[in-house]
Amino acid sequence: MKKSVIVLAAAALMFGSQAIAGDVAKGEQAAKKCATCHDMTNAKKNKVGPYLWGIMGQPAGKVEGYKYSSAHMEKAGSIKWDEATMNKYLESPKDFIPGNKMVFQGIKDAAERDDLISYMKTLK
Ligand code: HEC
Image 1 (spheres, rainbow, N blue to C red):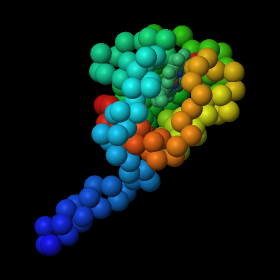
Image 2 (image 1 turned 120 degrees about the vertical axis):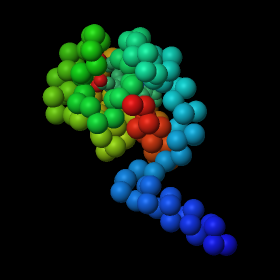
Image 3 (image 1 turned 60 degrees about the vertical axis):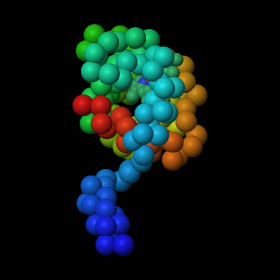
């Protein structure tokens, strides 16, 4: 009994300051949908899409050596990839950045997006 209280308190401390507290392990599974086009490792290789290592907290359109579409770059100046912007983008990339070249319909399940974003935050 005591132990579980301590574990809960520790979890609250760890996640308390964050808006999103998804399941990182589930997020890693979800990220397989992205890995065809995105390198998510610290090898930092651009593929069809830019590498996503360290993307959380970065401004959009800034991955070195990647050639973005002009549609992406037009919006990129006003986007910083935090939890809120990434959540909107992953829900529907084509609505968040009309005309961008990421051929991905988005993730409709909010919990899955939370898990994925929590995982993406560990990629640094
Ligand atoms: C079919 C290939 C494909 C898949 C699958 C895909 N992406 Fe992309 N992604 C791209 C391309 C291409 C771009 C560049 C868009 C542009 O320049 O218009 C991009 C851009 C991005 C960006 C913007 C990066 C920046 O520097 O601004 C993020 C973030 C991103 N993708 C995340 C994801 C995530 C997370 C997934 C999985 C849920 C995913 N993508 C699935 C191809 C893909």
